[in-house]
Length: 201
Image (tube, rainbow, N blue to C red; front, side):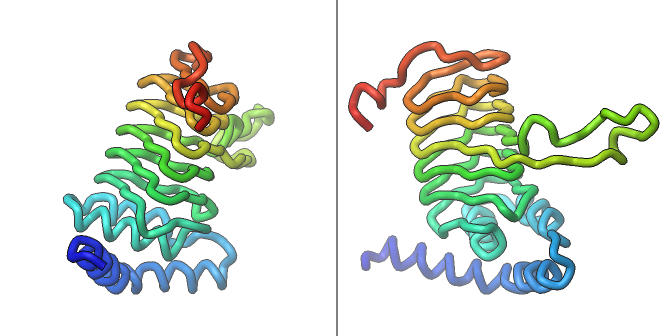
């Protein structure tokens, strides 16, 4: 193991030790109440810690509290998850102020700043006119982002994005984007087949 790898491992271990009280408290409360308790609050607090050490702390916390999240991810300042059932692949990068709902993000994918992955299209019901919208049932659907995809700044995604895709900045994904595509717009439309497809990725 080289010095750089040793240093990263050391900082990861230190980060795990520092966030362990928060993570263990959340996991214990979740086991009793069968729902997220302080998960969002902890994530929002940790999202405000700047610099590289903040990235390690966030990665360590989500490693301990998400359904799956390896320790080789990078979550930039202001980025949070709202659902502990999310699954994150290896080497995933979240830009500043991303907000991730119930999602699965594949290995090596990059999300630019201010990307929002919603928990599906129908999180809030408004079918009963006699009740306030915020009092009506909620429905969460998992959103999938495939491996090796790049979602540009200010994207809102409420449908799946395939592997090896590039989605242009400020797009709104309302329909599933197949693998190996370049898409953009509001709503996002496929513009052309991606470069990755031509290389057989």
